[in-house]
Amino acid sequence: MHVRDLAGEAVAGMLARPVRSALTTLGTVLGITTLVITLGVAATAGNQIVGRFDELVATAITVEVPETTNVPLVAWDSLERVTRLRGVVSAAAVAESKDSANLSVRSNDLVDPTSVTTQTLTVLAATTGLPEAARGRIVRGRFYDAGHIRRADRVAVLGDQAAKMLGITRLDRAPAIFIGRHAYTVIGILGDLRRERNLSTAVMVPPTVGKQFGLRDVTRVLVNTSLGAADLIAGQAPDALSPGNGDMLQVVAPPSPTRARDQAQDDVNALFLILGLVSLVVGAVGIANVTLVTVMERVAEIGLRRSLGAARRHIAAQFLLESTLIGLAGGVIGASVGVVAVVAVSAAKQWTPLLDVRLAIGAPIAGAVVGLLAGLYPALRAARMEPVDALR
Amino acid sequence: MPEQVIELTSVRRDYPAEPPVRALDDVSFGVARGDYLAIVGPSGSGKSTLLNVLGLLDRPSSGSYRLDGIETTALRDGARTRLRGDRIGFVFQSFHLLAHRSVVENVMLAEIYGGHPRKGRRERALAALDRVGLGHRVNFLPDRLSGGERQRAAMARALMGGPSLLLCDEPTGNLDSRNTGAVLDLFDELREQGLTIVVITHEREVSTRAGRRVRITDGVLVEEA
Ligand SMILES: Nc1ncnc2c1ncn2[C@@H]1O[C@H](COP(=O)(O)OP(=O)(O)O)[C@@H](O)[C@H]1O
Ligand SMILES: [Mg+2]
Image 1 (spheres, rainbow over the protein chains, first blue to last red):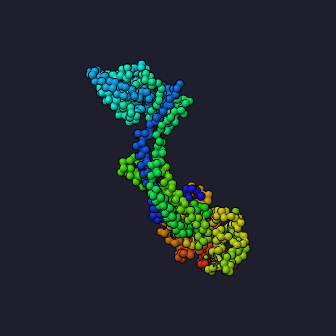
Image 2 (cartoon, rainbow over the protein chains, first blue to last red):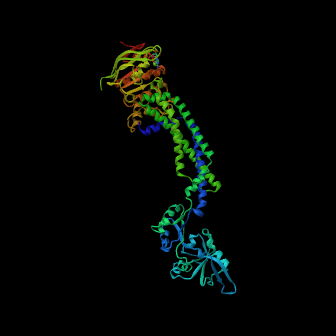
Image 3 (cartoon, each protein chain N blue to C red):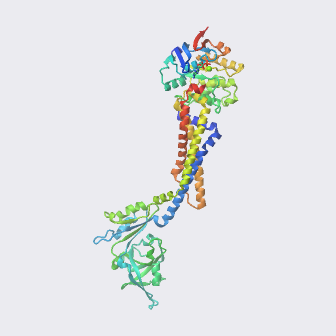
């Protein structure tokens, strides 16, 4: 028997009693709809949580470099290899030490030499990418560039709080600060920090300048990745920074987004899942019942088909396919209604709806499987029928 | 093709009951190609049992049944089903047309089992309908046809695939005399075209039109002159 003939007979059998077939799908529709809504809303809500995470931490990686006595683990110029990694948005290397954390910093307003402010501030050395890496903004002036670093210019950038404490508000007269005995020109103020907020009370200087404060080696690397790349970069960054010694570096990576999602899914209302599954079982029983009634009504048809040369398996296949199609129809309708509902709920809550392709494809398949299972017994009954009895 | 379409030798069919019913008792007869045979007998004499055996729907308890020279009693279920689909066209008293399918679709149904090509199936069905004089009703649903037309549609279905044997169980049992006449005319035509026909009937009018008549009484078959 040709597959298309089998399909044609099954479809014709289903359409012969369209109202009954439609009613038979109801249980499956209800079950699949409930499941799609439950899972879809949970996934969408879960995605929302991850979405909020994303902006803050899901893309931030910090690599801590332990102190070594002889050769530094991470060279300043190795940062380039990290910025080149696919998925890295910005990165900066930072040197900090206990000694440089409490330095006396003095500002001297040239206009008013009497107003001298001394503050105890953190001084750190950093590469040029720090404003982006710390997700901040240069609120005044500029950050130092590669030229400043190469020439070891005595320039400094202040965090916005540090600038306020030192009474520096304008840069047009090239204000200077004194760290220890040396003067440094303030060329910029860094503010609006969304990462490494403590930088707002720090003084940042080029690495070539930092040596004067004992800031010789990189102690920390800040990396920002594109969404979803954090896991990958967290694995790649150490070896890029310190080839061969990557495992000595400590990587602080955000919890992987899948785990955030899993946690969200734990919140899925188990009651609704059970409700959906119960509806499916009810739907299956409904299909089984109606298919069995249909088989009994069509005894003469079964006899006729046997007389035309249909084997038992042809009869079984036809009824099995009919019930599977009814289940599939229920699954397709249920999935559609469910998806529309998920979109509606998302719209109401102003969420971005997350429609898992596996759910959209899996739901109709689940319906078909329900129909298939429900059809097993009726199909078997139909196939077992003796043609002599069926034709009587 | 052997000249004998049907060869029955000492066929018995016992139904397990208390006491056991011997529905066919040592039945032996042959049907040659092109024969038009009527099997007559009173109710309960074993006509349906014989038809079921001839149609490979039932197995004899003992004896031999050759169809087109093939010994069928030793065949497995699957082979009997295939043989039935290929070589036997059934015509039933109650037509057995599918109510939701058009006449031509009902006729095409005869070719969906077994290895018939899908190509040209509709044309073959239309040709079969032409052969029974129903070319003008092909897209009707069965409930729009008269009884005689329904039986002719069923005969067109039985003719699909060129069977060796047309096996008819009370084909005019549900028809009035005018429709009976039309169906019997059709049998005559088919017989002239060389088809082998076996008709079970209890109607005189039907049996007298057949070329040959056998009578069955209490499971015993006797040839009538
Ligand atoms: N399945 C069965 N079980 C027991 N006895 C049966 C069965 N089918 C038929 N019979 C008996 O076998 C005999 C022949 O029946 P049947 O072939 O149907 O006769 P007919 O078709 O000529 O009326 C009858 O006595 C009937 O009661
Ligand atoms: Mg009978």
